[in-house]
Length: 362
Image 1 (cartoon, helix red, strand yellow):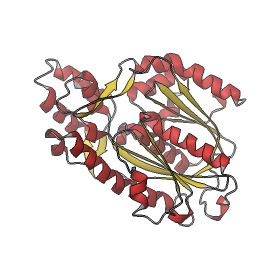
Image 2 (image 1 turned 60 degrees about the horizontal axis):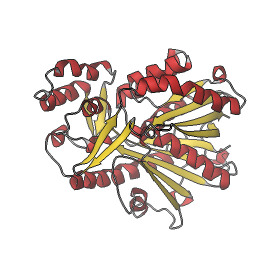
Image 3 (image 1 turned 180 degrees about the horizontal axis):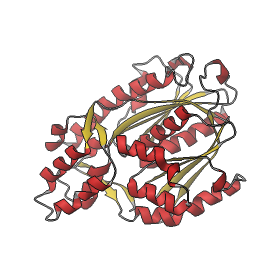
Image 4 (image 1 turned 135 degrees about the vertical axis):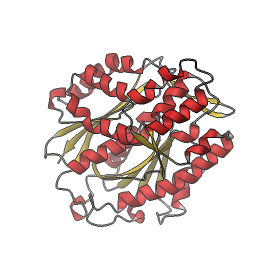
């Protein structure tokens, strides 16, 4: 099995407490919503305590053009992406020695919150000593499912090239998509929930001698993956792209869709791998929001405690779109797993879509 060896984060500079976010939203939205105080309860009830963003909060109170916001995305994505790669390749919690950039065979770059051509990983390769023949696979548009999808695509790459070391770099700067003149409830809910986050994972094929540099006695190997698209669900989640930039599309029906759709999807995946849900020891879920976590619990009938790590990431970092699942997985890896224990990694995104990975610690 391809193995996940190391994960690291690069946390954006500015921390915003949820109380500050409430004051920010009240200042911008109170004139347009007569029931603003009722709507602001979404900030209080979402169990988010703080988040991180790439600009000072005052920056978001002023209009910025699409070009200005996207240039800010490129600048911060390169800086934070470089830092996440360095942190991942020199992470003493997971590695006994630094993995050098010129050892990396491919980079999967995952994002949905900004655009760049040449893509961000190409810009980073001009600043870090990667080999010129390192393969580049930028993936755009998978939203919250993107981090799990990136791991899945890296798994497939390592199956095809089992002597490879592969990076999955996820950069999501959701705050830079904020539209201060969008007075929709979707934008208000998005403001209560989304944040900036960057993370990088190192995956190795099974012909790589990981014993030479792994600091962990057990690590999660990827056994199998499943990607699923729900037909006729394009309006559930995504972006409405206008002259001013990216406007959030966020259906209120997402929790109910999860409740009805997720369990059959998960059960089919596990049965194809000769497993049942009761055999899963680690539930590594993308915490899209408090209601999403509650929908996981209700749909799958799992103990509340299996979502504790996901909920803690949500509390401390908010929803960082694709990067969030890597934050969650990193914490599971730091705790370690018993040899032979199984993990189910799940994330949902635009399409409406599901990404599942079956992990086994060994």
